[in-house]
Amino acid sequence: MSISSANPACHPLGLSSEAFVARAKTELGLARPAALDAYKDFFWHAKSFDPARYPSRLNRHRPLPVDGAASESRRPLPDVAPISSVVIDEGPEGKTFKFTQDVAADATKLAGQVRTLRTESVLIPMIGKRGIRTYTLCVSSQVGCAMGCGFCETAQMGLIRSLTVEEIVQQWYAATHLLKHPEIPDPVVAPQGLEGPVRNIVFMGMGEPMDNLDNVLGAIDVLRDHRGPSIPISKITISTVGRVDGIERLAQQVRNAGWHRLNLAISLNAADDEIRSRIMPINKRWNLRELQQSLINYPVFGGGKLCIEYVLIPGVNDAQSDASKIADFFEPINADYKAKRSAATPRALLNLIPYNPRRHSPWPAPTEESVDRFMMWLTELGVYAKRRRTKGRDLMGACGQLGSEHIRQRKIVDLTVSG
View (cartoon, rainbow, N blue to C red):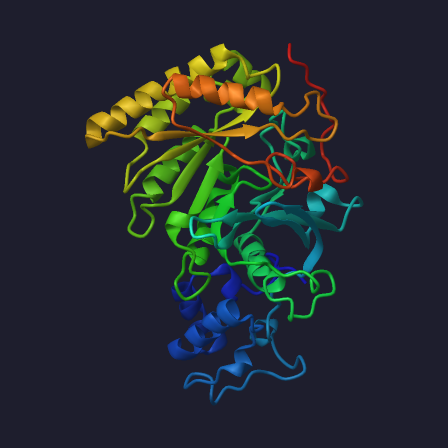
């Protein structure tokens, strides 16, 4: 059973530990020590949350109702949705997992069509310098997406609905407990099991995180809680297509204590307004100059790197002139950073991503030769760039490939290079 807005709100999945302590005291009669025990047991030991398991001075003389004799708010509450499906792609660094979980449909939008929706999440294996395998978890913040980027499978769905804090966090819970510990009974995933811990969280799954920023920040507050998932803020990244208003709001958030090292990634994909507007409609609202200025103004803490993502699409944005325009886009961002920080290294890092064809794609994947050639041009221009290795393409789990073709709200628009 999945968490929904109809469920009672006092549950560890959707609250930081301090918020849970406050709610548990007034709504469940749990004193602080008992509430903290319940919180840690849920996240650390995968114990289903049952308030009756944690007697305290506050509830010792107020036993929880039995057999549904009293209000819903005093009963054990539902935990996370089980994993609905899992597919695995074997690669040189280990298994890439794509898994789904059911969430409730929005009855006002999808009445008579579907009763449940599914989130899609991907676990990407990484081998560190010491040869130890860890995983990066790519989470979804919405079912579908409203941004309309032509190269992205999720965009073909349209926006179905945004996910709640609980529905975002339960993706981490499922990855950490249901996949990592196959002894937990689940016939879908029991034969599998991760080969290392989840170390990084990236909001690069379905949806535009800035369109659901309240719930994304609420989920990060839970994920970074040291009594809960305990993911360091420096290991969490929010990616955006370039919503300048969202970047400006996030700039205020990262100024708060405990949030300084939250990472920001921007999907650039073209450094030319005409091309970018053609493949990314968001550019018609905030053009490259406005996006560039928002990145110059973005606060710097620690290393302060900005990850600029660039999906290389054959015949669209892979010419030598495109590499030159990237260098021009980066130059003022890096110059301002070096001037303010007396830094020797650039601030902007280009993450070059070979295009992963969506369903009915008008473009193929680029050849290895074209990717290497583009990297060479960037290097010659002094752009700090890295190439993202393709993982999960065969299971439609690579960058830009998440999304269900069965619950689309818009028709497929066949794009051409000429627009």
